[in-house]
Length: 299
Image 1 (cartoon, rainbow, N blue to C red):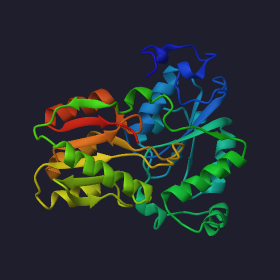
Image 2: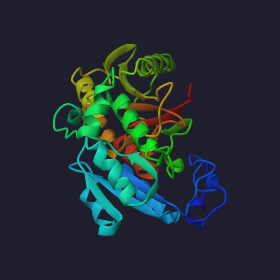
Image 3: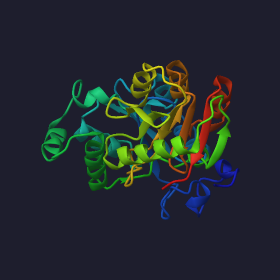
Image 4: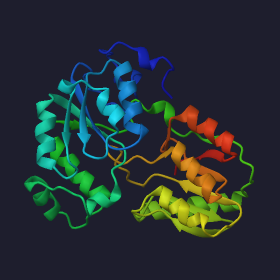
């Protein structure tokens, strides 16, 4: 992990690894970074830490997704807004705010890829060229357009080093999970991720209760909870070829609360892959709710 004092280094640190190990070696901290922000605390945490590291930050607000609190934290001259699907406008606004780098962080409502999308001509052409249309292919195509515009799209884990899951037990849950059942859950989760279906599963004593797909983690947890099964375990992993520029598995307070409602007593996260947002609060909430929290070895 990075040294504890990485947040207070001067903005022109010669070694980007001292700011975050996920920054490229040639990162120039004097140039502007545009945050393309979706929902949740993720983009808020990232913005806070980037600012503390002395980064010149700009905001691209996604209409109906970005939190008002985050928007208000930027001066009018430091932010711009686009609707989900306006790829051409996104590229123009990135140039308008003078961004040399860009980062995508935060969730976008899954249904917007099918309804509520506002594709401009650039997006229509881009979508027409995709054989498969899912979150990974669509955001991957947007990433290519950003790179073609001369703006480097960075790893979405920058400045989030301290929040990565680590191997071992972080919180001891009230329910004990037998190693054999943990192994089964990990195997199913990794196969599900390999097939690009989703990154999470819920199992109970060797039975698969639910797998995560396009609907997202919380909807999966709710489905799994309807069975009333005992000794439920939620496992979350990364994909074998995860594109961490726009797709990073995360676990936050809301997910823990959904687990509690669904009667799921333990969660296992792939170490060095899944982000806990933010880690001290997630650990404290898991302890408060009596939910076991552990990191498992990355495959």
